[in-house]
Length: 273
Length: 267
Image 1: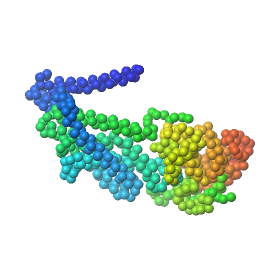
Image 2: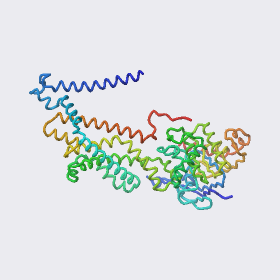
Image 3: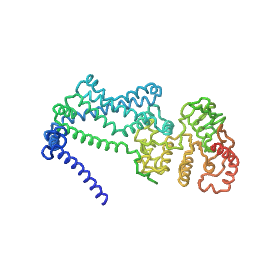
């Protein structure tokens, strides 16, 4: 009962922080409430930082009219495609390199180089190659997701317990069955462990790609608004993106919980006979 | 009687990967036999290369010299007539207990329905009815060992290789498991090579005890037939005069080696 109470109070305080932030924002940017402290003109604060009531009404407008759904849908599609393709490629290449030491030794410096390169810089090239449609954003997301998955798979294969491996061989597994029943599950468990990271980066890839040049998507909305100095819409876009990212993360948590039931979680005790 | 497993003049020399001049001969000129249906225990001080010998018998490790034959045939690659129970955890953590038990059947292409039926039967035989859908981390150490036992026995191997399988268990659980092992063994009469550093366990379980010298260059230094009556209860048999007599006799040989092994570990 008391823990429930404490929890409720915590939520209340968290909500208060949000409300206070918006209030402070409103007070500091409203042209009428305070005399201009820093800016020469009373309207300049609102011009640079937007006004919360306008931002919120813009978000309301988007969802009420339904005009945002198309853009959210595009961004989500790009995120999903980038995640799926990046994960598949990372899994494939990771398995291949982890299981053939020669290939991994040859590729090692190039993988390190490709990983340390700031890959967002590839976005303009992808825009030229794949046009302004969704595929240039997917490509950018793929380059971000690929390395996360790749390194995790590589690690996962390397960390397979030699005893488990020997045991499975003694139980009669062929080379292909070893790959399917030992290396793959071990590698995918590591991929799931990095799910939050890779989904997050797929989302970043999609939004950054849209922002750099597109005709649809939430990143495009922000880009458009910025072009006409509509700071309220930029903030509205940012808030929608944040909410969306949180929702995506929650979905990942649910999926992770279902797929990794076999993993011992901290605090769970061994059940005795 | 036929030799189920014959290791002839096995030597294993390991070469350090970084420095090829660094060599370590774990096992030297060792000959070991297990007859059909015989329970052989191999005892020796810790770190004497017992596991190396077992890995050679399993086909997981190629000996530097010497040969292995299984039922008269020379072994090449994995010994597929043998089951291996490891000292460490060997279950796949991402598979439930039942799926771990039936994985060998799966590899052999046994149809799923039949495999599940046989898997559940084996879970029952090792006393784990109703635990089939638990994952290894949800089971206790003793239960995991039982799953490993079922996983190996379900394939009905003619030879069982066991590498201190119960050493991580507490004494009570261990004696329970040893009795269960003897029950399973007497029902199916497989050839067993059981490795342990515990002389009491060795005598309680086996038909024959082979004592190994301390490493490096481990080799057998004594062999004793254990003519205690069967069926045995491992907890009770330890108290019989004949057991104590055998123990004293074998310990006289083993003591020197244990001391040698101890001194080497101090260095």
